[in-house]
Image (cartoon, rainbow over all chains, first blue to last red):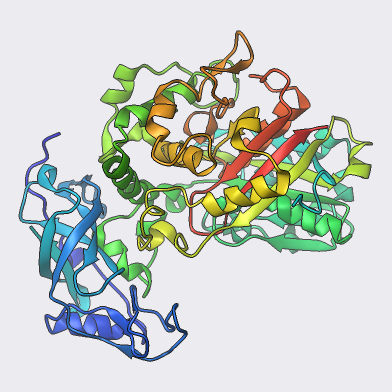
Length: 141
Length: 405
């Protein structure tokens, strides 16, 4: 099928909330820095950020700066804006984050036609301002 | 090792309301529908509803995803004199057949004598399941999913289906065959919502909602209620129908699946799966049986690709071979012989969530009961064992093997 350009969903429709476990991720994003939650003891990465390392049980966390690149693990192609039902081509992607083995983010990809998105495609972070002054990591081809 | 509670309890009563297209059950109330289903199940069992002293729910006692059942309210308003068991499995629809295992736990612990498992569903506009993830208020966890626009279960499942297509060469034709093969079982079912035969051309023309999934790959949105009564085998002998014996029941799953598509962190090969492998292995270990021993399979079908992936996880075919298994017609029921086609085990002889009705898995239990009783509309000849599955969803997922008495 032919869909045409993939666009990120409009940031002014998107709202997030945080808690003390997840807020460092979003604060880093505000600084234009893509991070992932890493265990401060054993170094295991986990996303979304949670209180305890599932590998070693440590509560220590660190937030290294990642390269900001990723690989598309899977995706869907959608053609309606979920907030208002209007025609809007967007591509939700599940990406593997470079520099943080085993972690993924769910985001939108833009910068190419939707039908050209493919598994294994390399993408780089693309920051989308959203409500309340937060910044969302999306990706571009 | 055989399950310690094997063949010690049975489903003795099934009851349901009519099935309504989403929102069309109004002005009935959800409590009215739940009560009718319970009364019908008791009548089917040949007991009074006042004999029910246990409630074994799933989906965290949810009625749909926004309403809640409350045992205090149900027992008081239905006039049950006392209850001595009230328990639920957590998470969502994945626990449906597992709730019969929960019922068995209450019965075998001698906490209760007749326990009801129940689902009622009324999708008024504000309660529509199809948009439930996207309509949820942002929270710290879903803030890592919602902004991507993966807002409905179908969006989420399409990402899993895509990965399966990538890894194994699975085709959309196979998803279509799941829908067509099970649609072929509803033309003679008075209560089914979709009864017309489905052609490949009609399937291919169905609108793409979340590529690679079309509208017809999504299950129905239904209102209605279904209840089933479980009791011990000694009591079951006095009920109206032949007991549907609880031969095995398991719920759970492994960490690699975990929160599943509310998370998307599953490593391969779990990502492109139904998340059922761990629970499948448990019911086979409990029973000493395998997929090939099943006479009929009632496979939870909220989305057509998840049927294919469950067939793999339960071992009806090897992992990655679901496409060829499905396309060889092995899901189909042959009314002329009362058997499967091409050596397969008939799947969803009732039409399933895709075609008959979606009461979050309960209709699969009803069909399993009717098959081993020998009273199903699309009766599988000499059916002895029926597999019933629930989910795929966040853990627990679950399954149940019913046996003919």
